[in-house]
Image 1: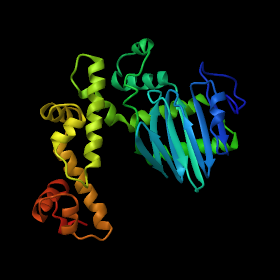
Image 2: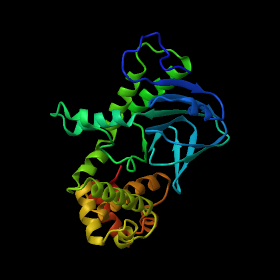
Image 3: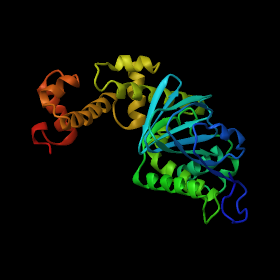
Length: 307
């Protein structure tokens, strides 16, 4: 384990540990003091409790890692990553009976803030000097996503570097590259956060957190009947305020968001061999005609003509 696994003299003020763990234990992380760490892992069976530091990214290159965070389960299969941070006091990770290649990266929140600031205020050359906390609330940066081809390529490269212990540049530049790509891939979420026209930062953070909660409820309701009242209640907002703020934040009404998700799901169900009538019932449309109208509105063609 080394701060810099190359022979390049220290070039940046910060540093980055790079290591590979080929065991069923992550206890070695307790020894790391740097804010930045790149660790590749190979495990077949693992049950451990982890404590996130800064902003952490968990990527699965091959296999399946299951995380339990605040009564919610995240299944991070091949090509997916999970973002989590120090607002989560602890999380459980389980790997069971499958050789799983993974990558864990701890990122210094101050570096993340600087990239966020440059994205939001590209003309301000001095403001980064006053940054001292997340521009985007840390409680919000807890999510899973499918890595883009660029992200997969970068993280797989980091796995190779960790295993080979060979690098031809300062290790901190790997962190710079990853943060830049990470912010780029999450631009939609970040800009949604700043669309909320609120004067108090604390209010924006809380409302955005509630809207994300409502968004999760909508996504979980694709195959189940629900109402906006139920979703708004889960978000601790009135129906009207949930509707208004959801549309302001995400650029789409909650109802249309759910319809879009159901139409996307219908395509998956169709590929599994179900007919359109069965799919319409499964997705809680009143009848086939209502489903067909919604399908055409979203895709531009009727279900029977979709290829």
